[in-house]
Image (cartoon, rainbow, N blue to C red; front, side, top):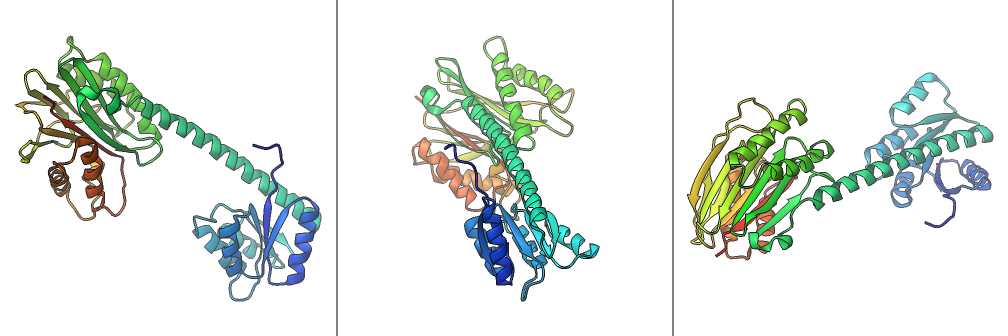
Length: 375
């Protein structure tokens, strides 16, 4: 940044030209930049284009009153955070209350006293700048959390022998969905996907803990059930009221061609065989972090070179308007099957695009982990 001081821009809205000119001259004499508008419609257009730091708004104007203009400014995301000070000859409490209820921050009586107006303008500009500084600091911390969260996620290029591709899009800057891929030995790989209920910062803080617990409870000393039960025990202490964690944990042995899948309340793993046949691995189990005796299911099956496995979170199957969860799963299965001929790094985002085309809006984190059984 340069060392120049910030010069606020103030928009004066008044249907009387002499009032606009006198206020502009007075404010500019004290170092402010000004713009003006003769009516509410023009003021709203100028506010969208110039983004003034504060608006001085006359109340009594033809066609559109200052109260109506303010309400429209506050309903527009582009202008809703601009502070509005009303200027009016109306000095009754009812008018003042109405002005504050429509979103104004202050009410100055006409005829305007210059020193009083300057003091009020400065106070509200300082408040806005303080709020902006707080917002910048908060956003910086969120971005740090987002970067830290993504830095702990294993990327396909860092473990190419695991033969996987991933699509991850948190709803907010940081998400509650989590995945991990790791090698038990040169021929055995673990694939883990989890979804902490909720999303955003509170859920994202738990993902680093999940990764640490996952690695502490994996390896030859622990069975896959031991791993999930270790996560379950810690999550029961960390999760807040009504929070829970669903997870799917797949272990693939390239040497034997055996796939071991454990589920804890998670949507079913999808299998697309090299022939193009597709199926889901349905299991009835409990989420983690809730019950003292959690039911975890395990399935064992044989897979072949070229088969594809898909682990995902429920953001991909629950957002289509009017569709049931089962219909969401079927739609995802069909997308996985349809893109079977694409190489995995292209297939995974293509599958997500197909599913998202059926959604009006995304309302949850999105995570799809695709695995291709290598030779």
